[in-house]
Length: 384
Ligand SMILES: Cc1ncc(COP(=O)(O)O)c(C=O)c1O
Image 1 (tube, rainbow, N blue to C red):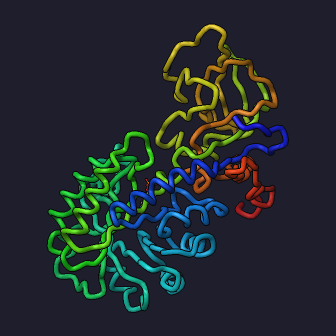
Image 2 (image 1 turned 45 degrees about the vertical axis):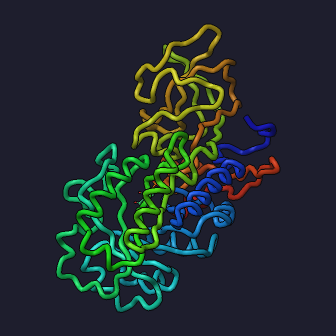
Image 3 (image 1 turned 90 degrees about the vertical axis):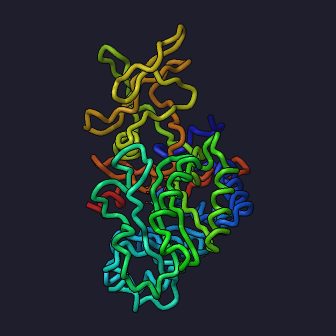
């Protein structure tokens, strides 16, 4: 997949600059056509040395609290929008200094902190009680959700300091889902929409995925901002980091137990957590998926192929990536590449079992590998 790899330490997340730029260009074009401002949600995509690249195209960062706001300031220094399910008393002053927008999750937090907010614009997160999210784990508007304020709970609230509204109701969804969500939002929050200057449509827009209906998204954003005279914001995370890099891992050993099994110097649990949570089976470069990580058969082995179960280097029995067919036999020392492993990996990984954190590598447009961070024993020792 890449030319020079023998010397590259594994495991490593390799972010490909040209692919990241391609995503960002598309998002920048969308912003230009729709007049919406696009922020990168750091919870989904944070890669220190690439933030200045993203900042060439997008308006700023959507942050989940103090540390992400500090990261946004340090590595991009554009608009900073901070929302948290609950802000802490001892952090709010610093967050307020850093953030252009602060979004509160409850009327209580608005009342508690609004006097401390001097410069930032204040917004409220709305709970639409409607979502098309594919799974309850990723449904912020489901029953008993703690995320956002229901329209009925906003009546009779003093909204003097509030200049914007925010919702987040999508997960890897298309523009048609957003259309449905907007209908509900407009209906439920109609009493408040004419009073605000900005509305944030949250994340979950799968904009850079092939087949996404960008024209529809442009039309929805434009129509909405024209109708209410507001600035629309979008804050995708996944769409920024979508398919723009890999997790490279080495085969440490090959064992057999009725099937051939390759043990890698990575872990699905520690380095690709969404493969277990979503769950899904990651694609691997130059290989076909034969069975999912749970063992469900996907396709038959073809003649001349070599099939391996790929497994992680932890003691978790289920630390399995899946079963794959390769065109050539795997050998100890070979490198395999798990595709699309940049978003929601680096931001979520752990040192479970004392496994090494994958290094961060930038593969530049000039086809150079730049080591951004190398992790060591200290990273494990310091957090345990
Ligand atoms: C409030 C908020 N904004 C933005 C995002 C980013 O979503 P995505 O990475 O799916 O675009 C999330 C994800 O959970 C979120 O909770």
